[in-house]
Image (cartoon, rainbow, N blue to C red; front, top):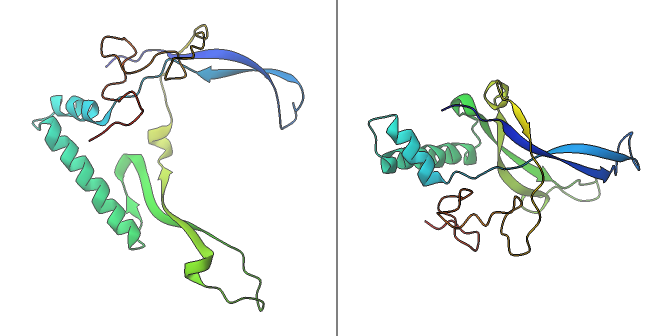
Length: 168
């Protein structure tokens, strides 16, 4: 698969924080992105293997479910080139001697944390292409002006339903 340039538009705004706060700045923003739905991705992987798209999807789903079970048990999972999965959570501060720490009350939002592999997530060999910002369309369903729901539209985002749900 040949690399195509990453498209961007320049936008002008006033900086809200940092050393340029209050000054007009120009910033590049990625655009022209399309979402590759899971089934389409699995079919693409399948074409490079002896598996079917459904088998690839089943293996990916099983791998993520098993990894999550390990993380739920407090383990750290090395997920190959993607990175490391580990358990994490937020904790309320409790003043010592005033209130006793209660895990059920004071530990909140347990999550799976992905520590991405720098090697995998650093894009190398990419080029960039400046494009003009598309006019915003009130009936549009995406940031780049395409609805993403018409299979005949070149910006079709395979499989997404008009209401944003991908379904199963």
